[in-house]
Length: 210
Image (cartoon, rainbow, N blue to C red; front, side, top):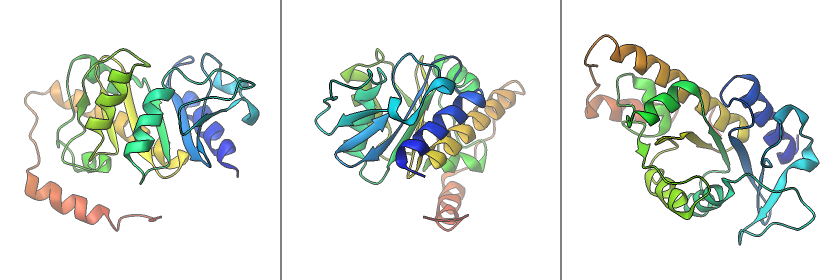
């Protein structure tokens, strides 16, 4: 499967799963000379591989293409800052967005929080969508994480393939739902740093590694 087909499959799965309602959200993946990303304002089910947009390493877009997602600037910035990742999924999933709009990050209430690469799933500060300020905020927040919430916006997940980035986004949404449920029961009990370090170490060899 080509990288374009992988991006399209992840985008359509993201929409079908309910992670990103309507035309919201976007998916991208590195390719030679830059990255490819879903176009702005089009239904995912209607997209074809040739509708995907190449954004070059300097941020330019060939004139004959569709207009890329309005969030292409933060995809570009994150790829430049994180050479270890090759795909990004951004969505407005319901529970993660609810926490983000309440100004809440997700602490280590459950060991699976380590799936994002650290002791918590942090909250990036708010900035206008498509702006340089948002790109800078995400680069700073994701310097040692593979996922974060975005204040008053949604969530973002990074991985080595579109499918893995989508899987991580789904896990973040599941954790957000669980955390919201826990909050209704009172003050959550949080795993300590020592235990989370153990979990992070075990995750290095967990599952099918790249």
